[in-house]
Length: 639
Image (cartoon, rainbow, N blue to C red; front, side, top):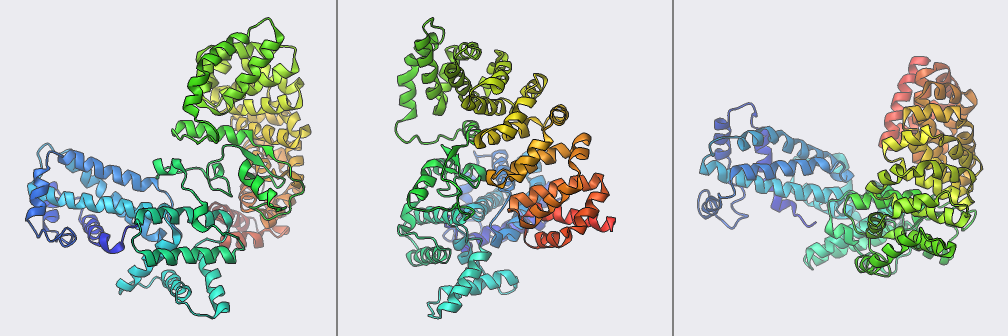
């Protein structure tokens, strides 16, 4: 985004002027105030003057009536609300601007509902305000996902022009930026300033630097070779940030291609967990490494092939180099992509043409599922499993051709390979929301639970993943609980492979969101296996285990069973030394336990939790800070 603060200052000033007027006034009084506003944008429009050509042109376009215009402006306000977060350096001003935009909403609603049109002069001023709204939206979007370095450069320009602004943080950022761009040769001072600037801009970690690279690449594209000197300074500064972070980047900006889904949907907010920490693109084949972190298979494989033996995200040494598919996350990603109409690029073939090519084949394969010949059945179910793996059109075609009832009938077939491929095919098909209901309606859930108890290791794992996928629907959560699906999932959590434990934990977390399933899980003995998983650091499943424990503390029986003083020491250790997410989860559990049993808070105080809470309040995540403050308040009441 290349919005120049000079070019938007006039329109934004007009927004502020409108916002300062009394919204309690009548529409007639509001019209008078709008009419009286100075035409500050006249120069920018080429000298139209106060009431000449510019206004006349707008009046000729009044077929775009005031109702449409105010509706568009209200949509801008909704868009501004949806951004949620902004770059730290502009956060205060952005929230202030969003607040001012929202103040105008009641006035716009009244204008939209007027039975008689407003005067031509007032309509012209309303058009001016609409232009200002449009510029404000562009500026807010830039501050939401634009380049952090570019935003500091803009802030520097604004500080030079704003005589009365004395924000200390802004001044320090501007000074640091001037130092690193001055070309001085004092490398020690330069590096110290660079490190401070990188810290303030949160451009130290690999994911943040790659996100900034993508933002700058988009900036270059938007600028279309303009402001070449400024652009080169931004690129050079990004390279220096990468150098002090110890990242080798010989290809520079050329290595990051702007994903197609971002070009088509620039305002789409993609969940962070769906993005590979290395490539920062939506994962199509997520895999789990030894530290429990998830990456796109191709990206982490390139990292490992280059000789690295550490986790790119945590920098911990990898105890092994095995990559376990993260089916649960993959299903969530595919569901989200379908819901938001995001089409992921397939690496080898075009999905649409492939779907057309396989349409007749799918019909034939569904027929073969009911064949009297075992070989035909095996071949058909394996092929359907593969076809349903990636392409949404295939999943739809398989369901439309009667594939789901045929597959469900094979779940009880006395052949382990057919069972394994069948439950996996149903897992793939369950990504589609409509298929979930059809799979459950055809009676698949009892058979999937049976395979979870008695099937092969891969079949058990995929059964757990299938139950997770199906349980996204509340009625199926309850169905799985009623059909006694909790005990075999708990057994898999306790005795399964690493992948099996992860699939079971994900499914159990989803299921115990239901209050009745909480009681069932506690009665089935879920707490001991979850605590066991929490203690096995090599699994990298602390977040999952703590999240399940938190949900169980919301039930009285769970709170009593979990609230042992020995467990409080474990929580305090996570609060002290865990990852930011670990700390958030541990704080949530301790806060809930302590609200029911003050002696547990006293035990935490004796273990020195107060010092760790103070540290989190200073440097923790926003959510962790809120939890820590609440705990400090509760601890003060206990002491």
